[in-house]
Length: 269
Image 1 (spheres, rainbow, N blue to C red):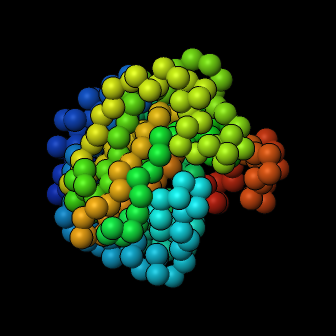
Image 2: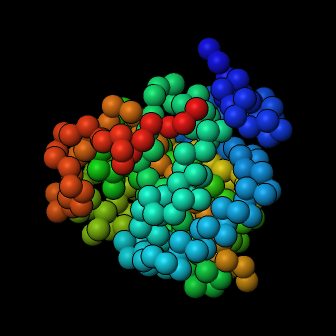
């Protein structure tokens, strides 16, 4: 089986894929066993600078303020579809190679958004899982959270509950329950999670974390004087189908329809 380095070396001569490849087995093992993994140095310094500039431009052109969690996060809407540089990031062959290596199955890109926490203007993001919001039937959906700034604990990095993706009980709860109790719905259904040790992962600019859509996680407030800019890239099983949620059917797709390649392309390897 070819490694991510084997797949991308010809596309990206001189890139830091050798370092990436040496760590890829650890990343895959941690993701599968713990539900999340840290990826150091996913982007180079020049890439960080270019994609951060594109992210800030996207926020200025089209953004919304998060209301579901009351965190004050500023986010884009379908940024990867509207901004060429961010689409390039979403379809980055090095990232796609890692994603399929970790997943062990063909994938497609489901989404890519810029997330900004301004200094002293945001609150902590409560404990949640992403599957609650997913409009998909899929064997696997997961996020790659890419830091476009240094993100120490004080700037709102992510905290994960190890192995929470493997918890028993229902696969997911109704979205309506999350709306009623955004900070407590997971603990109410899975009370054992309140005793699970939590792992906080500070990131350098260009680092990333991967986390399973069922992994419980949270993020701190940005209490620093510096804006926190990140890019959230979502991958899903290439055979995933559309699954609208009660009261939430935003796409021009039929329930059970396969995702169209033109809008949700296969990853580039």
